[in-house]
Image 1 (tube, rainbow, N blue to C red):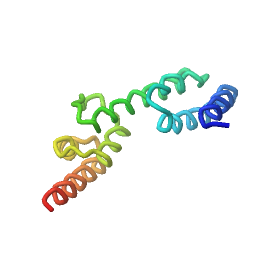
Image 2: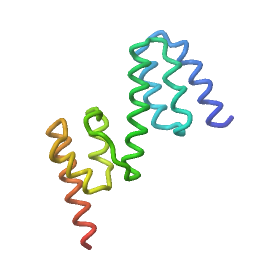
Image 3: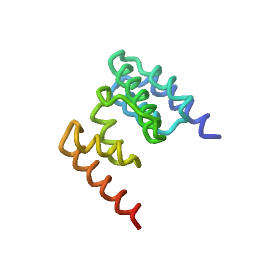
Image 4: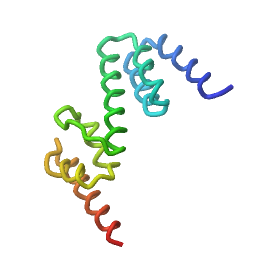
Length: 126
């Protein structure tokens, strides 16, 4: 049985999950694993409107993360702390890391971005 077929079974199980926190956790994990084109449908398997909206927001953030990682410019005002943390850990753009180091929402984000920027600059000098 292929992975996408197993994902269908998992989606069916999430639809029937009475604990919506568990359902949300599964969906958030899947959003990071499925192809971009499949992300839209995963939040729809959550029964709770509040949790579904949270999952939809995370799917949107993952799209922003991917665009930023590809070098596209984004609007920082819309970035959640989760997104800023991921960008500070993964970004390869020194300009983006400089913005996060200066304007990140938390001290941890600013510190991580500054350290990653320093590492990238050092490695590019070699």
